[in-house]
Image: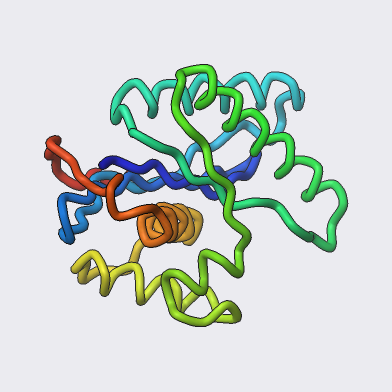
Length: 171
């Protein structure tokens, strides 16, 4: 089972690809897709759509998990994050891949065991679960890997196999 986790954002969109084979978890890729903050919003969204499509083509995830936008103090940032999330969902659904949304608290609970865990606690638990020694940076990539791990933790046991293999690529 390959899962692409996404921490949506228009300027920085984190992604993480996790493979589960039985009880074994393996990080295959983690990174951030960036758009030009000086470009028009429609162009940035189109760029993000294209980049997500390339990720889907390269890693061929079985399912995609996206962190849901619940609340942000800055309305402009919230709008951009919501638009980015919609573009990611459209790109993935257009490829015929199932999409599941998780709240930040659901991700924290699944990965760190506590819905109010801070970013450092979540990042440490991500590394612990995947046997990664060095910190995952930028934080958007670590958050995306956490979303993928959340999805794998919450899915039915009958959907947890995989036949594919690969090496971690941090971008």
